[in-house]
Image (cartoon, rainbow, N blue to C red):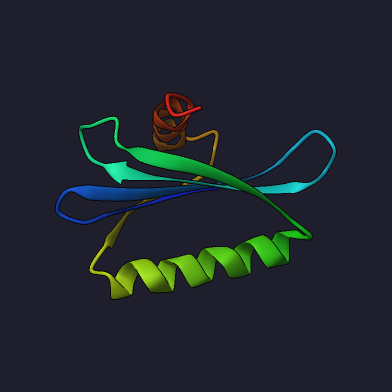
Length: 91
């Protein structure tokens, strides 16, 4: 699952996926749109439910900061693949 929020000039992108060991990985990228400024952080969740709680918490924070959700997609959708291409540039 990929979710992206944007404000006037900033973005936050979350990728929630399972790795080859079955662990749930919560990857969060943030930065300024159109620049290389930003960061990337990964966290291992104990379960999918915990990762979804982190996603809900982050959504709440972003909405309170004036961000709007612009994307929610599966990894294998065209939108998800484009978002993953952006995320991979930050690694």
